Length: 95
Image (tube, rainbow, N blue to C red; front, side):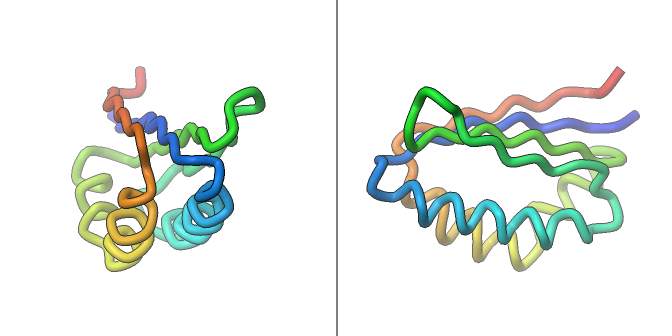
């Protein structure tokens, strides 16, 4: 069964360009992962500094491999997360 992740990130508007650039770079790397089925980055139209990510992997192990990847550590943990003022993540099984 496929495994999905919906992440909502919010940063200060001054950090929006840096977060956007890191998310788009992470998208390039993540889409090349063998277990990745989808990785979409959305900027909320009416809330500056807000992003919604939709990710889908073949299974939970594929997502775990994604989190262990060097680019995840560098771009998400090291670049994006320190700039966030809010972060929520929902995990789901795709029906």
